[in-house]
Length: 294
Length: 323
Image (cartoon, rainbow over all chains, first blue to last red; front, side):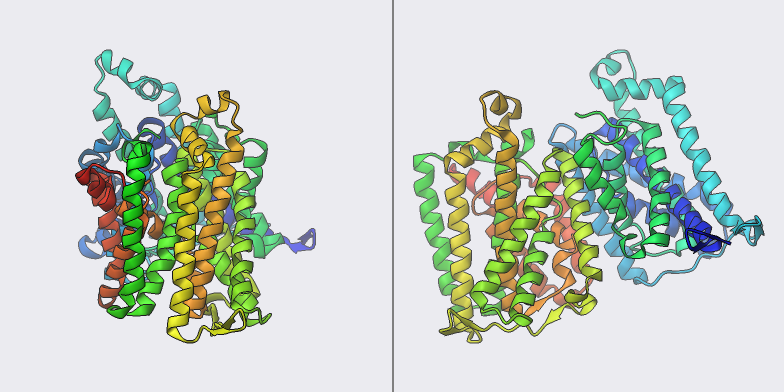
């Protein structure tokens, strides 16, 4: 069976890979958007924190014998806590300065973290076994769907939608959105804004670590796994604009799919297609598809 | 852009400040003219290439308030273009450098038209993403030699007379390029163009309401910066006879940010001092190899947290004159 001269197996296989990549783009750009909303900082360490999540899962398994499912909960907590310490000790000193300093600081932190891990573990990936419950796969008739990949897509959709729900529909999210608009006023109402900022940063980082754990069985555990990824995620963020939570989720998945399709029809451009889309979006709608200029 | 001009005391750079800067410029020129007598010339040539690269970057952040995180694309593009011109087409060195520089200027025009549509953090992210696209292009394009790069680029004879294979002739060329580029930036910053650029950085809305075509000025600054970064890249390729992917990778974009941050954002001599320190550090730390990244990261963090004026910024504050 063929569509446009491409065997359906190959087409759906690439679309599946696209959806998987899209899941990670969505989780990471969502984390960036949440952090940017409240802190006005672009978290350059995001890629390194994604990598730390994967390494945390690896350490838990090899040093303590704790498996994938617990790692899925423990790694985001651990990396998120480290993130909150970084926020309190370093980022908190920069809020009164130009936002670019936050970018420079987190870039430096990313260099340190990735450099240390690379010195210790080299650049060849370390395999991380699939959890047993999710090994194997099922035949859908038109393609073979590995169970683990289905789980990654499902889990990231659920986590993204839950985040959207909390921010847009709950009281906690209302505080958050209010503090994004006007932190002084929210503080005057008796809400502890600095603590909220710390927790928000921790949450955004935890999302990155969660993505890292999920990526470990697919991409292996590698000190530089987040280094190039974060640049693609930046482009995703520019395309979507950081104005809306749902926008970053939709953009993430959509761009993953487009990247997958490019791999089928014009593989040479698959590395660059997201950047080309970014250039086109900048020409047509500089604020991004879902963004507001500010 | 409040914090950037907090540490850029250039507003006061009037007559008495300029006299000071003339002396400092003379000291710097004398340093690079005499240093090869005691230091390794290739090291100094590398420093001067990176110093020009950093000065070009500083023109954008220090006077335009625009932080580019993709300046490696100009360094690398000029490098590949001039290496290809010199090696495959047999261009003499002066035309190879001109051709490389022109390619970077063109790339600056194209990417600039896109990037100046956003400001601040978005500008940084867009330039980074565009540079990554350029990186992937060179990674795949056949003429760049992929991971090997373009090796054994001939230095040739400058104007058909001066054989650049002599280290002193090469040094003289790099010295002339660096001093020329430095003075050009100095001239641009103190021209009416530079003043308008500063006005835009301080208050874009007001500059716009005064009738200045803000985007045209920003684009001009961006293209000028790209061109000079390209000049540095093309010259560097002749020095090392090599154009490689290192020069287009994002780590290189980060390195130039680090040089300027360490030397002093928005200062005249900061980029030169920053380049000298970072290149010297890389030379002496070469034995510990991969730790260089970690050390660079630590310098970033320390500079941002406690040393935002940079070496020259602090020095200028100490003597009460902008440097």
